[in-house]
Image (cartoon, rainbow over all chains, first blue to last red; front, side, top):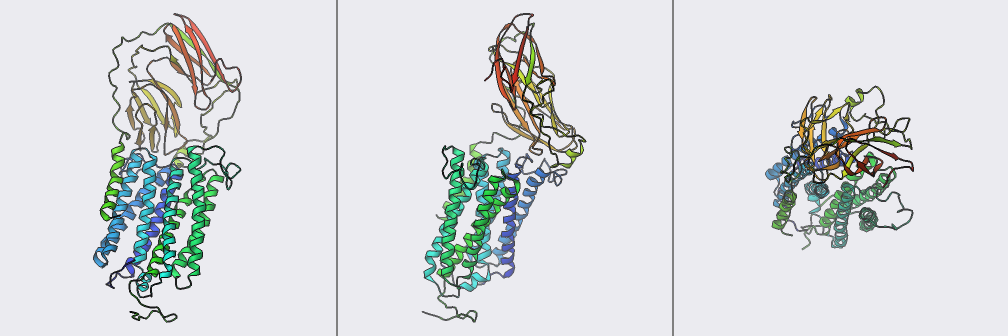
Length: 328
Length: 261
């Protein structure tokens, strides 16, 4: 990854705000997952108002309305925070590409709100609901990237010697992010087309390994399960590579450790959804866990690229913090 | 991918759903296009009566209304889904009986009085009903809680309308005949109602004893159909003569259906 020479960077405040926003977006994705798990998406039938009002009567007391209207209020808060982040970066961030990334996040959250409204007004067509789910993931990746590139780690990494040997690992991490995103898209299709119980047993498939009869929902569900195995394999491979790279790949190591834990939890949640007949808790948690896995994979990929090709050829002095030495 | 491509893709993403169509929503009541010219048909003096029975005796299931405390407060006793309401003698309520064919080409005027679907006690009343195309449907919220009325017809426009306050009413009409149009409340997932829209008045819903009666049927040969939300449909042929009473009975769950699927 190329980088312009060192320039004034925003302080820790913006990094902390972006990190908090990333956690908030993850919570918003969970709230969206709850709306679908409760089939509450149409419990507030109008948009952008709710029953013609800012807050419908007793919305907090009624489970479905609380889920849907609460999701809208939460989304409004996240959108506002994203604008605040972008404005702050416009004033304090010297890197143009980071500022643009922040405004792209604003565009994404506004588009996401529009998609949320459209899917309600059009009675939840799967193509719009799936797009809404997919854009939520991309928005989380954007905000997570902003949190990463405003961190002190990102700045410090600039002073470390590039490690070209990490490039294959960075490529693998990037491929893992792509694979996880495709797997999440498949999951969204399963979820929004009602294919979640098309294969009623777990871990087997109709008592075997391959369905005897194929229908659209069965094929979709089966593809999602196969995708889970592919993600598991790639995450294991990536983790092994990063951990073999040694202690200097600290952030990618931490990220892949988290990914390994998340992928295990995610598969367990997927099984629980089937075995409980789509109980609300696992059905909801499956969504933010997948999103967290994707965001963590993006952090693993970006941090690997950062280590593989730091902009300045400087060398880290082990055990004494960071010192600079021109190598050219 | 360049930035321009990225923004073009984003714009396409936003515009495409709009281009696909915005046919839903809670628009104004549908107005019916003028039907082909036809003289209003006269009712007859025949009648069809009978009973629908159910022999399996599966109990109706109670509803948990905890999702909305206000709904739960309205009921001291258990409330049931009304999916299968069968008496001790086997009479099956909430079965919809209607002439499904034999009236083609005849036009019957819609009644002037509206058909009413009420939301009371966080349930729809009636649970199963019929009305005529072009007849006004009034949907009322009699509860001290909010409801949304979500009709999901196959041939008529879908609508989803909020009724946040007690006493609110809205009016709709259906222009195309359809059996059945499901209604649901997305706020209270247990609420369900089924409504037929027919272009003739020869239909009935079975009472608690499973009986029904259709009066004023013109002489003719008809296919009579019974519909039940859980048990499906059955049909039988009937010949109606002027002034004659025809008996038609069905049984679900046993083996003695007059004419089954």
